[in-house]
Length: 219
Image 1 (tube, helix red, strand yellow):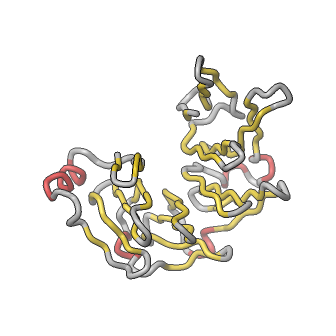
Image 2 (image 1 turned 180 degrees about the vertical axis):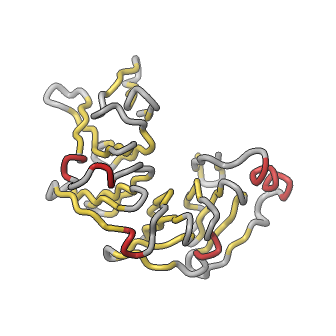
C-alpha cells in the first residue's frame, strides 16, 4: 500500500497496481496495518481504514463522519495501535477508533497545552507524541503527560520517531539533526552519528522522514 498526493491509496497485489478511492481524494500522510490485515489511513481532513469488500477487493471505510467538525481534523500525520484502539494523530486532536465496539472518540490536545503535534509512535508500553512547542510527551490514560527530558526537543520540529532499543528512540528533527533519546532516564545524545553528517542534516539535508529497515539499519 502506498499513500499518494493526488491518487488516494495505491495497492499492489503482486501483479498489478490498483487505486483505492479515498473520500474527497485527500493528500495521504499516514498508513498503518494491524494483525488482521486492516490498513488504516490518515490524510488531510480525512481518516479511516481499508478492508476487503464482499468480493475480496480492498474498500475504504471513512471514519470522518463520526467527528463533529471535519475542520478540526486538520492533517492526520501518524497512526498507532494499542490493543483494540487505533490512534489517529491530528494537529490538535487525537481520534481514537476502537475496532471492537466500532466507535470513535476524541482527545482534545489543546486542553493539555498541545497545539502543534507532528508525530505519534507506540514504543513498548508507551505512546509517545511530539509537539513543536513542548517537545516529546506521553499519551497516558487519555491525558498528555510530560516525558523525562522530553523538553529538550522544545522548538525542534520532530519529523521522525523510530524505536531504537529497549528504552531509547531515534529522533530526527528538521533543523537540529539526529538524536538518541532515552525515555526512562531523559538522557539525549547525538554522538552516535558522525558529526559532519549531523551538520548536513541541520543545514543542507533536512530530515523529512525515516524508516527502520532492520535491527541495525535505518534509512
